[in-house]
Amino acid sequence: MSSKKIKVAHLVNYLSPAGKEVGIVKLLNGLNENLFEPFLIVFDRVFDSLNLNTSKTEVIELNKKEGNDPLLIFKLAKILRQKQIDILHSHSWGTLVEGVLGAKLARVPVIIHGEHGTFHKDRKRILVQRILFNLTDQLLSVSDLLADDISRTIGVKREKIVAILNGVDVSKFKPDLEKRAKYRSQLLTNNQTVLIGTVGRPMKVKNHQLMIRALAELKKRNIKAKFVIIGDTPKYSLIDDLKTLTGSLNLNDDVQFLSYQQDIPGYLNAFDIFVLSSLSEGCSNVIQEAMATGLPIVASNVGGNPELIEHGKDGLLFTSNSVEALTEALKYLIENPEQAKKLGQNALRKARTKFSLPVMIQNYENIYLKWIQQ
Image (cartoon, rainbow, N blue to C red; front, side, top):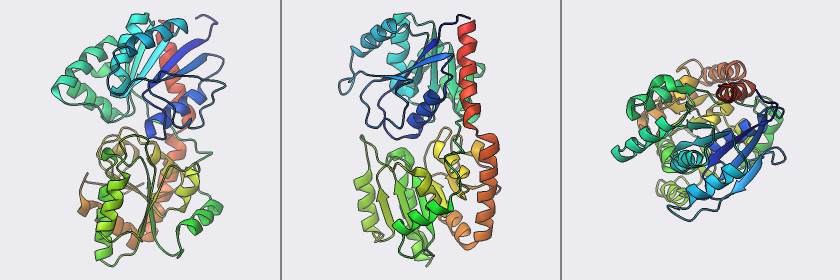
């Protein structure tokens, strides 16, 4: 292999606080500087840098037009040629078409595409994905369950897809009694109140409305708890709809909506229970972060969640989109605090032993080196 650094370009639609983008930034920040020269090409724009180390990774914003931009493929190809990119790594549907075609046009030696959870299953886009997936050298997914689903639905060989679980920085996400006291005092007037929280963009796939309806059910049963929903998105936000639902259920005093917060580890420490009610997930960064914080977790039984959580051992899984199932899971943890504590302790142990960030980064580096050395 040449002593020249390997130039790897990652593609995203826009950079803002979201699981996929956070995971990409963790990877870029962690890549071996002696081997790799990373680039991040943003089709739209950067709304939040997510603590990306820009002295290490060059960021290029293309400022694409709203909707389809027919010139985007050519703009991308020009940049890939100018920067002499060795590996193009596109992510999800939003960068698949332009990424693969732009890389082919620029004659990039290696094309890799990664899927992070939700992929399209309508007939037209299945065909597009099948064609483009087969034009790549390597497909990646963030869980084995997702890889199985892609292979079965799209019709690509399962052996072409390598699953790499996301990693969590356990030096950053960990139990912290000082932060717990600080943020609980900010969020609660009564420190004895059970605080249930989530972190995620207020978008349809995150299904926050299910959490709000479950809280209403708990209230009907005279079980007291408060919800905190952290996160926002610069596009397609449902925050106003969620606030309207909260008001209609007379829960304005019981639900707090916070925009994206810098100190997510601090807020996680304030929670007693963490909930993820998503309709679809790949390998949830925020579940891993909650596990590393030692929280009991209730998550929908979708996507890669069962690969992270063993039901009844280090968390609880509930039937997706079922208010009754989520309500019962929360009720159980609130009424059985010792069992909740045990689930949190087991989750913490698993996060520290199985979801190491250095292992995730090494797995990606191994894939890059494998294709460059061929």
